[in-house]
Amino acid sequence: MCEECGCGDHRIVSLDVQAKLLGSNDAQARHNREHFSEAGVVAINLMGSPGAGKTAVLEATAAAIGNRYALGAVSGDLATDNDGERLRKAGIPSTTITTGSACHLDARLVHDELHNVPWRETDFFFIENVGNLVCPAIYDLGQNANVVVLSVTEGEDKPLKYPVMFRVADLVLITKMDLLEHLPQMSIETLEENVRRTMPGAKTIRMAAATGLGVREWVEWLEARRG
Image (cartoon, rainbow, N blue to C red):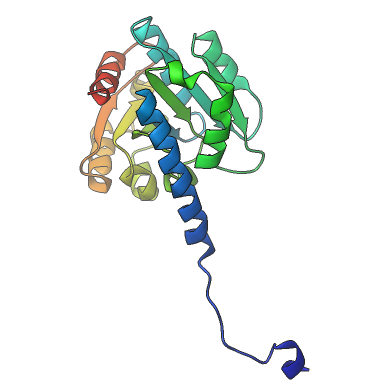
């Protein structure tokens, strides 16, 4: 029987499925990046845990920028258009990708969704990734920069526990600073040191969308990305 079906042949061909998937994704990401570059659009991949404050950051960004720059966004969630509704209410043209059970966006999903939002008319285009501190860091979407949103309520050790996410960060927004006084065990200095230990080149900005703390510095960082 083994001679007939081949199950006795113990030669094993190893296929790195993940490498193939990432290779295909990277090719699409390069295509996305070319689109953004040709249109003069700065694309930002905004990542962080559920509830870290990603949508609140974008709402504060829209309020601070006003009419100086045109903004656009695509948001990713397993279900609902709740974040998209908030962004549109804030004046940001946006669309939502509902992933069902997928814990991240990929370059193809972003590319296909661009047909549903006027991204070419924007100066800054934000990709609000699915709330997760693992998978989104692995997938290039064609962005110009990676921004990680980390709230003080998540604790000091997140950069050490989830190093892959912070190693790809160009900027870490430490959000909900207005709640720090209610967290006596929390050391903001230790948190920032843990970010530096994980990714020495990453910049951090202390931010509180509710009060406006750090929003100006964040907008200045964005403006610098335009060269």
